[in-house]
Length: 361
Ligand code: M6R
Image (tube, helix red, strand yellow):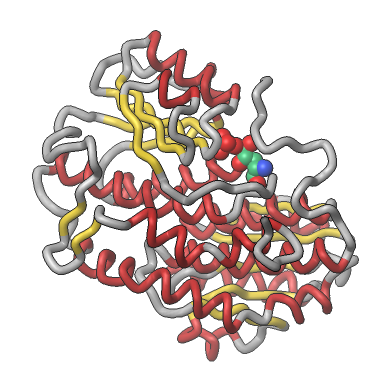
């Protein structure tokens, strides 16, 4: 049941401290700074020379995160939309690791991409929430995100668990390939241990409902971010369009002046995702849209609130490591989307035309 929540989606949003605890349970030792992922022993990834992610929708946004993280750790990695993978460079050797990211494990585009990778002789790995799903049979190996069942068609808690499971996997891959541990790992794992509590704080203190009340019914909603914050911006827009039926687009903050700015008016609220000081460049993009009358909503670490006083609305996130801050930013955006859709009276758990798993291309 919905355990007293009006929608499964809201229940699943509020489950995230616990579902994330399940994702990391027994896998992370933050005292010794080690990570152990069941079937993957030390050295399991030594031969990997590059990584290709294949996935769709929300899972693709999680994969973008992971690709950025791996690249930062020196491992060549690309996130492909699985439905476009036929045009991607062929993974030619068994040193190519192709990772399917799929909550359901049944997405047709993703399964087809894995078949192509298998035919090319690549090593294939499934990152999924669903034990016994098709993707686990098609891939050589599996890693489970352990988020628990997700009923809402719009993915929420599974995104958070995907991002963190992929972060752990990326650390293991890079450690084996580089034959050394990422010097930033200790700090990151320390913050990861606090992440369930940080999520709880977001849930307890979010101003999302007031912001939704002020903004619902506008013409379009834009979301921008740079670097890994771009994945959160894309995911914010996808969630809003799915459950509210309002027009929403996410794009790279750097792209703003190359076209999207022409759409900006006082009728188009713009959300800016800022996950650390490196993203402060996004501020000038946000001031640009504000000068054109657009309401500006900033999602950023609470410590940056002073630098961001110009914003019309502020969604604070607790201090954490920059590589996991996007999870917290995304939860603020999940809540805003939920409340906008709720104000508009949409059938949040079952949006028209959409299915929980898309089993045809
Ligand atoms: O089950 P999968 O993770 O493979 O699903 C992929 C997409 O169909 C899915 O993320 C879709 O975009 C969701 N409705 C997003 O909320």
